[in-house]
Length: 537
Image 1 (tube, rainbow, N blue to C red):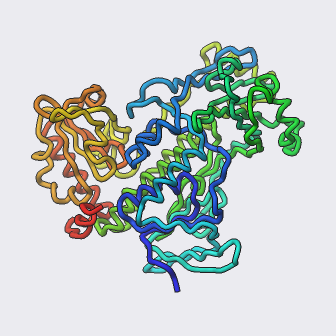
Image 2: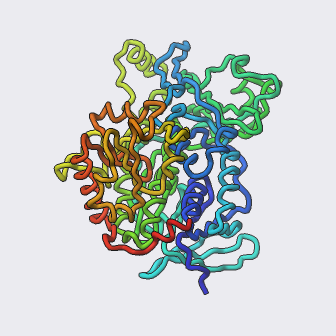
Image 3: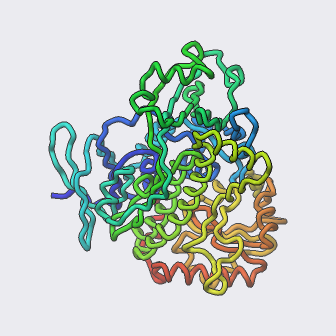
C-alpha cells in the first residue's frame, strides 16, 4: 500500500529542496522529502547567496537567521599574472533588493538553519535514509518507490506531484526523459576550503577580498566561503593543468604546496579538498505531467558567477507559488507549463555569463593569456552581459506579442512608513503570498475593481504610496517607477514585475490583462476552493 497521498514528494534534501519544502510547508502543504543519507553533507560547496535569494529566504521566515550565517560580499576583482586588474564586479553596492549584491555563506551552516525551519512546518515529513529507486505516474497520482539503505525495506509514497531536487544524476530527470544540452565548458578544478585560525585575517594574509588570479601558470580563485559561529572560511580553487592528475591534486601534501604562497598550517585549518569537474549542462525537459525537476537536476553551470545554488532556489521560488495555486484548486496544471518556459531561458543566460567569465581565467597558455590581458587592459574586451531579467512566460505584452519595457524586471524592496509604523515592504504586504499592486497618486483598489474577484483567487493585494498613505522611506520604489515612466505596477508572487501603468485607466487595463493571462494559463475564473485554506495557513 502506498503512503499518502501527499501534495508533493521531493527527492533529495539539499538547499534547493530545503527551500522548496519550507516554501510549501509555510503554505500549509503536505510534503514528503526523501533523502538517501541520514545526515547532511558536511562540506561546503556553494558560497554565494545573491540579493534576490536573500530577500526570498527572508520572506520565507529566514530574516532573523540570515545575518548570523552570511556576510556581505566584497569587490570581485579579476587580476592578470602581474596583479593588474582586468575587470571588477561590484558586489558591495546596494542592490534593488535593499542589501548588498552578494552575501557569502557557509553552505552546511545555511542548510542547518533551513532544516531547522523546515522541521517547524507541520505538513513536512522527512524520510531520511530512504533512497528513491523508481518514479512512476498515472492519471491520478505520482508514485515513488523508496528503499531503506540499511534494512533494504521498500515502501511506496504517492503524491499529486513529485519534484526531483536530486542533483546532476537525477532519477526524476531520467523518468521525465529528454536530453541535456552541453554548452561545451569543462574544466577540472581543485576546491580547497579552510578556516582562518584565531588572530589571522584576510588582510594579514594579503588576500583580495574576492578575486580571480588569471595567471596562466596557475589559474586560481580566492574568495570568502562564509561564516560559522563567528569563524571565517576561505576558499581557494586551482585549475588542473594539463600535466597534472586528479590523484596528484587531491594529495594533501600537494594541497599545502599549492597553498604555500598564500597560507600555511599556522594560519589556516584545512577543512576539505576535492577536485570537481565544472560543467555547463541544461536539461531539455523539466516537466512531464506530475514529475518536475529543479536545481542541479535541471541545470549545472561553472561557479564563476556564484549562481549555482541561487539558480536552483529561483526554481523553487518560481515553482512554489504556482504549485500552491494548482494544489489549491484555483488553477489547473496548465500553469505549471510556465515553469520551464520562464526558468530555462533565465538560467541559460546566467550559464552563458558563467562560461564567459570561466573562459577569462581558464587559460593555461601564456600567449593566449597575454592576448587576453591586452584586450582587457586596452579596453577592447567585450563587457560582461547584464544580469538577465525574466523574458518569457506570465508577463505583460500590450499588443499581445512584444514584452512591455520594464516587465520581467526584479521589483524593488525597501522600507515603508504607514500609520506611524516603519516596516519592510515584504513584511507589510505578506510577500510571496500573491500578486501585489502598488500605485502612487491614486487608489489601486478602484482600478482593479472589475477583475478584483478573479485576481483575489491569486492572492491579490493592493498598496498605495504617497501623501496620506504609505511613504517610501528609501525612495527605492518611487525611483524604480520613475525609471520606467510608471505610476503603478503589478508584482508577481516571486517579486518579478508583471507590468506597469501610468494612470488609473492604464492600471485597470493592466489588471484586466493579468486576469486574462492567468485564465489563459489555467486559473479557474469561478474557482471557489482554497480561499479558506489561504486564510487558515
